[in-house]
Length: 234
Length: 188
Image (cartoon, rainbow over all chains, first blue to last red; front, side, top):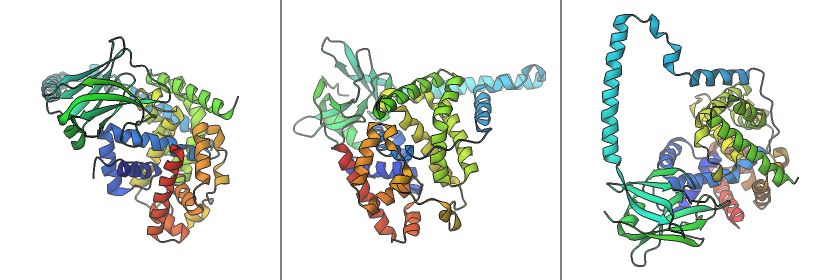
């Protein structure tokens, strides 16, 4: 599947939301969707467009008992497994075995966590500052420049009816390449596409533009460019 | 209060309730259920055709809302769209996992023919719905019917070909062109 064709992405997103993208194509699109935020933003746009169609149906009152079953399921889901078992009744041998298993799990978990932090260690490559010099977003990449994290810091004001979109500005005359919509608060972390990685490798700057909700519909910046920041190369 | 204002204040209330669910407030989930379960069930019944299956899916939807409430971001769009999207995804997952053919032959006859008037009053769903209604009107009859059968009834391309008696390729092109026109109309 081509990753850098906005029209193809939009067509797939529309048929995904419509429900006519089925079978292997749907599964493939879902994997892609979970990895790349610009695709998720196309899907959200189409949900906003089509879901009102489903809101017009006359409501149907659920049968008695549906709510009780939901309540029961969330009660069971919320109780941690330890609280439902009865550890005091366990025999000493079982308790010793449990202790060994817990220790193994702690070591294995620690090792996996250590491996993950090693491979995912992120460094800040661009700092986007507001008018008064306050830091608005911190843009970070992993050592392989495959994962991008955008952290919204104090000052990233949510603009109602708009999204902020991040772009890689290639040196020379190349067109800006979208790196996705920036979070208004909190942080996002996404795997970059081949096209985005290539754009970042040749970019000296990143920019933020103001776009319609969910990001630019055209694949190129449509609104005003609000910020430009230098990009630290590897 | 206009319909759009009413829809916005409803979305604000829904967003507040979803945030309260993220903070583990079960009363908030109950209120969400009171506000949304009827509309969700209508959509699930339309797609899954069987009431019992739809009510089971409705349970899954509310358990899922409870588990995913913390992922909801009010800045990304109306809460109603987020909630209905969870219901629709669940319905399509059930369709995918059900090995039996859900709507063959006799079943299809029981489903009311979808039509714009059957879809009801969109204005209560706010400004985006009003724009959608206007753009929908601009589609050709075939495009509208194709999109409606797919979206509202959960039909595949092949299902639509069967109920309309048109070739599969024709159906695919109605839908593809209909979506492209909708996109163009909604963006202007």
